[in-house]
Image (cartoon, rainbow, N blue to C red; front, top):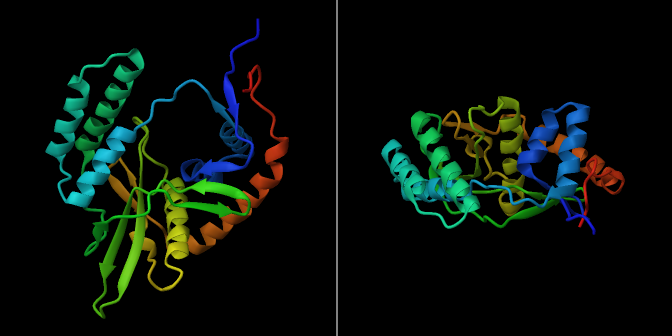
Length: 243
């Protein structure tokens, strides 16, 4: 009797910007693990934070994000009935996420004079042979005193009881800056580093792309070239059964 598959093989190089950002500050050993896990995806259904992130995104766009709104939605998810154990776990984890963010909610680090706008949530970019999902959740923009439009993008991260490392956040926001420049190819002056934001819901802070975001994005381009080159030779985890 054959064993049930434990991992799914991703044939072409694909990396979420979350993992690419982690990769940029990781040790060489940790880098190998990150890319291995991107190539060989666990088949067991991973519980995602999509419900919580969708609520935060919509509330940001509507201007209704607040401590009480987060608490109410978090409690609603925790109180919802579930038909399966997996669904129960999903509701609980998303509810806990919103409750945790409510406890640190603060818009003080959101850029002054900026507003939330819609953004292309299905945007994908190929960086030197690696398909990168930037996980764009919202757009940002502001109008300067000279009536020029400045633009940015935003994403959301959360790890329970684990504040996002500032360097990782800087790299993830730099991915957004690089993507914004690709989107605004007709106006190269529109994208602005401080409008490209990673919201860390463990601390409530919006982490902007730093002034050296262009250099960081170039470093990620070089990293992607290395990832693409090594992809075919990456071995699966020990005892993995590949589908």
